[in-house]
Image: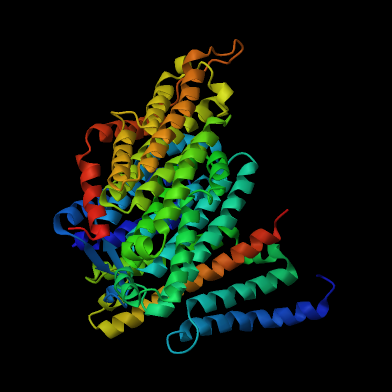
Length: 137
Length: 492
């Protein structure tokens, strides 16, 4: 797509706000519509837009496959880790209330960490799927 | 403290281990780690079964929310028994996995293979452990998606087609189950299985309940691969890597049988399914056709893995007969057969895999004279095969004994006749294996073959020896199965 000047400029302008909006949706998921999955999809969409215009190789230079796979695993481990942490805190699996002395506070902390895990995993998996399909021969 | 969390750990351990396997990267590490996790899961399952047997059902509140609103993991005699089968076969197969996977899977994919294996195990364990109907669907998808990937790792190109065929049918089956669960939820407002049982009973014959029953039953039958929904099974088992064939043959369809038991007896109740609706007639006739057709088709196969796959279709028929009898003896027979068949068929597929490891093929013509060249492996095949026939002393005899007895108790002597006829046909296909291995000479130009590596022998023989042991010592299997069946049917 090297000859499409408009597309290149507009997507270059759009990608940073998309990534920023993803972070907003991520952190705002506690109080309004949004959350980890949506944020992950938006973040992934930002990277995918960049890849569509500048090529999957360009995405890979920012986020190599090895990093993406590691991040996807870490996202899942973050989620499951909260489950284990709440067990150690004396609750049952994923009972976030047990993460803190104050159950309400614990619930807040737990859900935010879990949503971050979901966001990381979803964003990396979306990008992995795009890169694998884009490099399919 | 950890004892109270065992039900959650049973499912969470492999789920956490799967991404760790990917991060480990080196395939030897991934294998060692997976082995460790599988033996840990077996220990957890054994502890849980012991506790269920001594103290009664265990309920675990996921996230601390009380059932029926929250998600509950509920273990009783039935699913604790099935959990032990799943974790046990996985643990016993792991020593085998290293060399088999090194031979059959590309180096850069091996650690991913173990991660997928753990995810498939997570799904299967989750389906069985959970007490929540929607959880069943989610775990069903986890195990199915992982199984499709595992099957596609087969060395031959047909593995991709087989995996795709299973993907299409498996997705249809899972979707039907989801629609059925949706109907139940719309009508009752609950997803907790125990709670569903109470509320569905109160609703009687509402059309939505009838629809839910039809959707769920057909969906589960596809997953169970009962005739005529078996078409995905032969190719999937024949072209998958040896380890995957053995694992899926020992576990996946068994979980299907568990789902059928759970939905028919706990959710809808035997009076509804077998009194109001003609499930008994449908299930028995389909199962008996499965026994005959599956076994007959097995006789005419030219490949060992395909032969075993068609034999599985016949053996699934026996499970259907036991469930269809809807009596304590019948369901006991089905549950015992779930256990015994997992050992026998798992062991046989492992043996087929060791033959593929040494010969590079599982074609029956390659078996000629193999009885002398790979004596231990072929001995395992013969003992496992005799178990499929149901010869006394093997565990196959025990389960068939209960099935035939159950059929006579119900006055259904034709069913008993068909079960015995199925055994005779099984004798024919096992006879073909024995004839090839022991009564035919190896071709003169055959390359010398060594016996398989000891680790692969160990797994194969552990399962086959188990099937012999549980043919002689039936207290554990039959004892647990009888109590579980009585609990399912609500008998005292």
